[in-house]
Length: 199
Ligand SMILES: Cc1cc2nc3c(=O)[nH]c(=O)nc-3n(C[C@H](O)[C@H](O)[C@H](O)COP(=O)(O)O)c2cc1C
Image 1 (tube, rainbow, N blue to C red):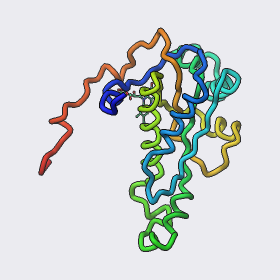
Image 2: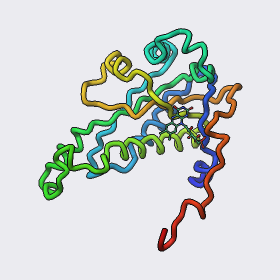
Image 3: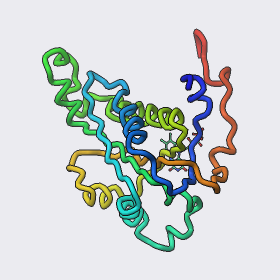
């Protein structure tokens, strides 16, 4: 698939069928995330990957501890996603990298030296690469908010110091993928977004 087509076709998918995704296909999506650009090539992005109903059900139990909250959730088909990927960033990896000799002239060896914390940028780049790879594989994907990271992450053995961006649900699109409130908003036009020469 052409890159331009993958970009145009990508839409968040919020309903999945529970059919498993071949391991090699999942790996290609994960590998795309690994190929994102990275500040100083620090590569402080890790992926916690949960495959199959035993692992994903555990995630959902922790992310939705109240059964009533889960029952009220608008996209019940999201719970069927056969794969969940939690992208995590390690700020310390960036501090360590920017303390190396070639970066030592910057103030970025300390947290206070980062007006724009590049670990979040790298994480977003990795997520976008994975979302596009999912389209390329004929899969659907949703990036969404991770509820209760303080209980979800330790339960899966994530070491302290790793910060989750959210979660990516991945799988074959399911039947009941209704529009969400955000998707009713029109996309801003190119002229509205672009400020040529002067704002
Ligand atoms: C940082 C970020 C957080 C998001 N969080 C959620 C979320 O928690 N739940 C959800 O349904 N969609 C979430 N979305 C998806 C957006 O609603 C969606 O990208 C937007 O409506 C545009 O639609 P499209 O991606 O299908 O083109 C999130 C997207 C981003 C980039």
